[in-house]
Length: 336
Image 1 (cartoon, rainbow, N blue to C red):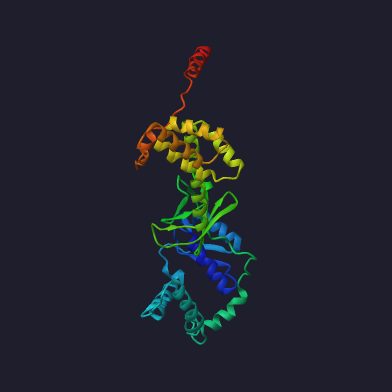
Image 2 (image 1 turned 90 degrees about the horizontal axis):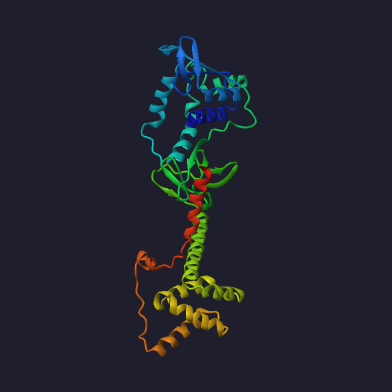
């Protein structure tokens, strides 16, 4: 429907006006239902006709003579324009078609009066056309698109990126021939050049950059939480490190490696000793761990590379108070 109406708008703009009556051949984009002279028009076409103030009029069924010479004109375009024509892309073809319409096609004899050209016939009729409104009718394709866990909307067999903050929401996609725009309510959140391929991912580098940043921050928070649960003294260490402007992410990663090498109990003791000495850096904690290891006569720890699920199996889990479940039983009795 959008392309159908877009063709109307292109013709009206080329003519700098439009006819008072437009004939239609009972296609579904114009006529939804017909019983004799009782006609149910497509509501979108009626809104379009009301905007431009023309009368849509379907021709009678099986009456080819009412359509004038439209189909003969299509044959003329096929034979006089398309045959043996070369073009590089759609824009090139459209440019050639416009030049052909304004020159060879306009200078051919008019089918209704062969004593004048098509150009001369249009010059006589153009003053009789209805004027165009100040603004053209919006002929964008509009669909609602659901964003899943990944920040992409699906439109016309392709995926277009959106800011990560808009995942798991229903957004509005509006597209014309060149652009695909994505809206959250009345606010435009993304704009992409339209792709006519299929199964492509069209991405805005800024969307990906913001997503990488938020994921990096999330990983840092997860690591810090895991470290604090396993080694409570690390909370004080991180507070002191933040007060002196240290890189919390780097310290967290270093402390997680020490946790894997030495274990939670030994790391807790080393952190407490480092804090007591006024140190608040992972290097100080590592020095304490090494001194304690040498004092015990233990061999140096070996770093092992284990899969994520294996490394997480020994994660410290804070036990939950079970007496809170008693409230469910008491609540049930009260309800009864």
